[in-house]
Amino acid sequence: MMFNPFDPSPLQIPRKVGLDWLTIAMAMPAGPGINLDEIEPVMPSSVFISGSKVAKHASFVALLAQAGQHRDIHVSISGGTQIWSDVVEFLMYGASSIQVQTLFLQKGMGLIKKFKKNISDYMDSKGFGSIDEMKGVILPKLLTYDEVIATYGATKGKIVVSVDQEKCIGCGVCEEVCNWGAIKVIDAKVDIVKEKCEGCGVCVCSCTQDALWLENVELVRKIARG
Image (cartoon, rainbow, N blue to C red):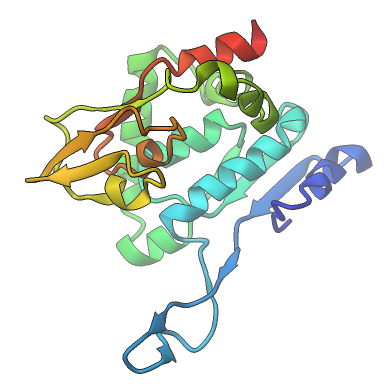
């Protein structure tokens, strides 16, 4: 099934009709950019984002939408795998298997051996005895959008971004994505005006070096679920 973020209800059909396997294909089309000098599209038609890093997060939403059935049927996800840790994340979101096409076309099937070793090493380091133990482990920890919005008044000004300057490479991605003007990159260092930070987390999700995190973010879960 193709995933429609505006209507995820079809993802529940497999369990309702007694199927035992669901493949979620993340083949969402995106419009091409525009060459403003030539006033021409950079590509003549839309492009599918299935093999991009962006697709991974859309795939997470799809897995979340069918979370209630991941123990009943085999859920296979397709779209967004770039590195071995993406596979682990998909499993933790409830996938039983992960399909990879674009990455293997780009870098070859030799990646399978590396993926297996890295995943195995990770499982050993965290005490997971099997793939099944990892499957869906993150789902109970995720709040719904409505739950998060309901906590805004009580958390405003308390959940703010911080940076690990040793990890930061000064790339400026966080400054570009911040809608509130709370982040500036000065002399390759991130400067945060915490009074402006809304704690939305866009910069944290966009950071290529995992150098950003949200302070006091645990307050959201504490307030939402007591």
